[in-house]
Length: 464
Figure 1 (cartoon, rainbow, N blue to C red):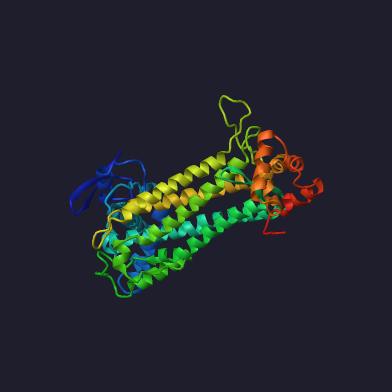
Figure 2: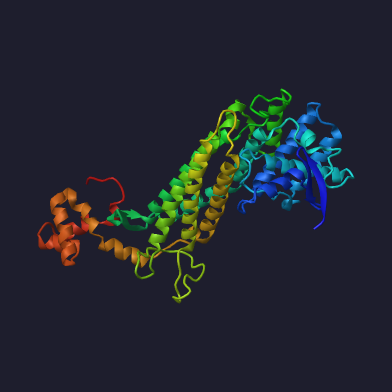
């Protein structure tokens, strides 16, 4: 590999000749060989959107020349088009403010801008990574700004549409199976009847509640620290820069970003990230319940509940021929466990702000973006390859419904709780039907039993 010599405030550094990044990125590569988790591309994209907005804002405020603004903006557009992805190699585990990643972005944009101007990679003229690309900025305000922009974009354009689609799938199943009566269950034991549609509707309602919670809390993420610079005072930035920069980010993304009303809080604390992570945990909890229910309902095919069938997507065993497993439920529930773990790590990291800066920003960002991405992908997969394939096993549903001892609940208004309990226990112990025991104990006639124990009439409030 050929190298060139770049310089930063600490002196010369050998950098790969073909690299767009420079000395500070190279130092980070050498100083933080920790793990294999690099900065997410969605986060880098948000960073570049902000850099472009900053250049345009500085230009409008008379601080950056038209030519340098054009060069910076052109370089940013190329990165946003998907070019130079391999030029952002830095690991999550670095300085707690994310300075190296900020400089990585600055160096790549400046290097490409200077190349567009006819210079060489690594040049610092006419566009300098600090003086021009980083103008009116500090890592301390730009890194959390990029956190919010990436989270908002991933939530709005990936997670939320997939969540809405899954909720819609269950709403469709609720309507489709609204009259299909089946056994209900509480404590994993037989309970009074429900419809399969009511069960599916409950899942849809859980998901819509999560969707509502996310929408209610997203406005806190729309508040940007941009313009706070080093400690929140806005030193070395124009008085109008913060509001103008936020409006340009909003214009670029189509999302309602605004300047945070208090930059000190926006940089020293990450309560908005904790809040959103909490809603993602709420979603993970809901999905865990739903996915587990689905695999229970589909369990078997002969030794389980078997009330529904789901798609057979792949062989389930390397030793047992013909075995098929509820793999979409398994994948989704594992994602839910990871999201809950991410929330714990994020919460601990967010609690570590000291005075004017929280220096756990990379791990906060990493866990939050990871949760969003995992949920977005897993929800889409579960929807397409499991939820949409749900089909009732009518024979099995009828068998279990008609054998349920808890149908005796319908008799309580007529014979009382104690006698109803006696009927259920005797029927279970002697392997008889409820009807047989009621007739044997002379509690009612066959016609009365048939009139009173009708599962389809046990689906809502009734005292008659």
